[in-house]
Length: 97
Image 1 (tube, one colour):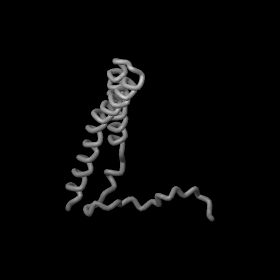
Image 2: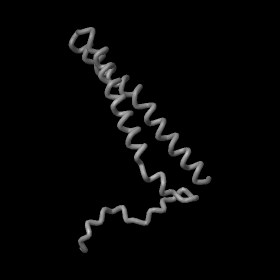
Image 3: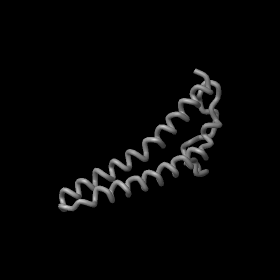
Image 4: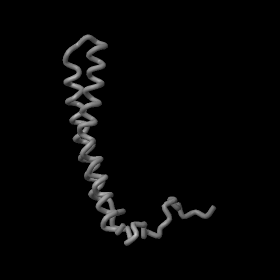
């Protein structure tokens, strides 16, 4: 599998994450609101929960898309799909132990 194929799969996975954020958040907000509706004997909380979930999902999807757009890790893959960055990812503080 070439680097371009691996990169395409990684990009597709990122897009699926972003696409699933909005309906998942909306459903979770509706579900929480529905539970509160039943518990408090109200009729409007499920709608408010769904709206809140959709807004939270939009914010999360936009933040995730911005994070992925600025991801420099995609530029550091070689033809085999391995990381060509030779730096140590352990967070060296510069002090010898």
